Image (cartoon, rainbow, N blue to C red; front, side, top):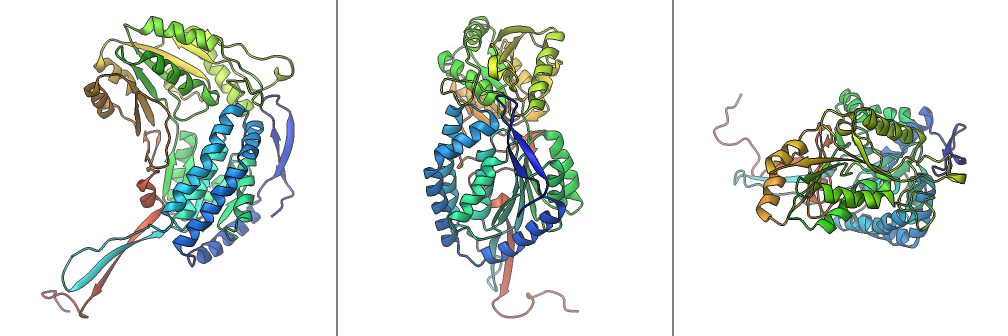
Length: 473
């Protein structure tokens, strides 16, 4: 499929254009969904075992192409190559996990009455519209495609207009390994393309990952056709460190939780809560490390923090940093930015704020950049109060050697994922969802079996007729 209209891709490290991709037109979108419907009817005729074999073949090929995907992702997103290599190395495992589920969708038998054989089956929805963001495009594309088609659905995937390159390449590889036509398709373009997908009459299920305000728009639009949606949205996650924790490990995790991926993570531990007895020393150690971060070219092996993916997001982060200063927060540390050929790149300095209050914009809003706000708390109750003082509820971290406290905090925090003495550990076997403005619907592990399929019940009379005692008309 070709389009006369194209979109220009810019290199985040320099701001320069370096590639263009076609933009899907409304007419082409109709053709895509028609092909998807035909693909679904054909895909239903292929056994789960055969589906699994194709996915295993895909995983093996992605292993072989790991470095290619890492390089494409680094150039397209500006993420440090050390990070994109780690992400690319994990994706074959994701595909293999879902390949193993392809032939294991089972229903149940229900002993309702001895005169009936009653059972349930799980069936795919059909055509799934997947809309993924620009921060981790290869991982999100893989995690949308693999489970969706393993459960017997087909997928029309729209990556963000700024970062479509790995998704487009992934669709090519799907075709190369023999996944049938119409089962995996990628469309490109702006938000208007995604909006058309949500309301398209051939869409049976919408999977959206992205900004919470966009998620609300999608939910309202999908409601017109009663199309179900699953949404993983933003976060403002608390990372709570008690005095009895392993402080060296907590320090490492605090750095990773906010400054990896240039802070462009829905799970970012952007609100660091420190017990008052360790606050000053911990902040001093954090500041030393942040001030020494190497910010620069994502393709440089020594770079620790790259640019933002988009100019707009960079400008938003810079504005939020200035807002924090204007509202009276203290800049406890700030990294230096690169110059020279990178001077026009989408860089914002990794920054730590202390002396913050809950009414500040940098505390209330998801920044999606390398900005950390640090709170001081005196006891468990205050830590919980601060942690839950947000409209979001995606994730949280708790650092303590007290097992009872760990359980109490995990029960008390309003979030879909809780990490204790670790942070940002994502595994395909582990389900997760959001509270509040972080979305709804859970995915991962066996939750996905329910999320991506629907249940049908069948009751067969062993002797034809109505049950005894049922009134006849």
